Image (cartoon, rainbow, N blue to C red; front, side, top):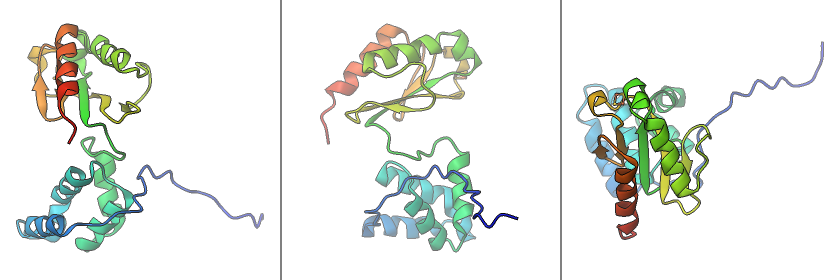
Length: 183
Ligand code: FES
């Protein structure tokens, strides 16, 4: 039998965040959120949302911090982050464009719409997964049904919902984003 070490490393998609630190207001918000639940662990999703809202994504350090806070193992939090598509495992752009690709929207032209955004922003329309422009301004991503199948093609720009999005409307959305002042 070989003495070579076994290497069964499981790929971990979480990013490192070396400067991770929880500011006092965020910790106060988290402490308050936990009080809403009879069991601490039930607050897991809310804490992940709070973390993502603050940092823009969920890092390995954030997962471990939440686990410790809720007296869980990191795997208990990790499995949530990697299951639910609304959690970002890496930073996304200031403007996050989510184009629905499920059946009604696919039939209604969402693939062309996604391609249109990619071409306008210098991204690869055939690449898998979310893509972010080099300047960090835009992320373009396909998502599953956004629950407005009758008004396809449908998309979201951050938290704003857009229905029946033509290429002309897509250009208007991009223009509005580009006109927003930087924070
Ligand atoms: S298929 Fe796009 S919103 Fe349902």
